[in-house]
Length: 407
Ligand SMILES: *Cc1c(COP(=O)(O)O)cnc(C)c1O
Image (cartoon, rainbow, N blue to C red; front, side, top):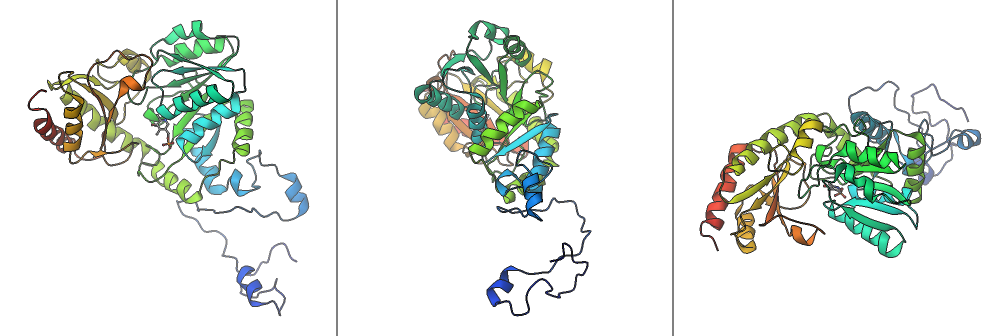
């Protein structure tokens, strides 16, 4: 069988003249002309990847991303997204996972074994906390929750068996901004790795490796997708050995992603910064307006002084995106603040963020934390890409409806 036919004619040259209909359905000889060029990356679907001969099959390994071995380990489509995400975060390696949470699980499973200790911020993303508690209940890993504002104080919590410090910058419900460089310095002094959930900044507004982080986790479901239609996560690193360890766990856990989804993320990456900045501008306008409202006791937006860690945000971040929270004055009952959320028209009720549509969710924050000093109902806003004036008018009408008479 010739390796490469130099003909584009429909000669059926590789098929026996008497090949049956089913065989003809499967073994078409047509090869499209070479040299197709366009901006989008092709959507390469594959479970099976083909090798020209046995020697080529034996020469390739799934760890080596200079070649293809099996769909689970990637196709040109996913390799391209991985390379772009590594570039955006100024890292060297990237692994894709089927959700942000799967990326978190990958990090824990790759790096931890029974007997290890991990440090988690008390404001960490709820399912990350739930995973840590499960590891602690069932897998012999001990977990300690720390004050997200502790900074260098993390040093006193590091034990001989501490393997990993998780950080979220900022915590995506209560918004405390941690001192990432101080936490990293203290952890590295004891050879402990730091993993950052960098989803809030979208990889746009916080150069995490420059601030000392070892592992960046992103929920691409948010800004990178931008469409409220894809679930995906990424784990990005600089260190080769660390990536190899994560890659082994990635294979063992079978964390494949669908190439149609990969394509959707790739398609929206070009506008990532434009969208992020638009969310940011609108969110700051709305947060600043909320600050003037008597119904609101605190605006937990990292770019505003009410927010714990605001000074650190000013020092380390270059933007803020669309996600922030408020605390309602404690004179309002939860029933009233729920009624406020129900009365919103443009803001829809739903989890996640980073898409074009504005969202709003009330949280029972005191039930989510070991330590919580705030008062009043916490409500989180995701500011979408609608006109800020319309969103403000929506919040105002809902306040009038729900909060006109204090309980
Ligand atoms: C959404 C989110 C995740 C998880 O992402 P999914 O793709 O929904 O699993 C993790 N961390 C943060 C901060 C998030 O907002």
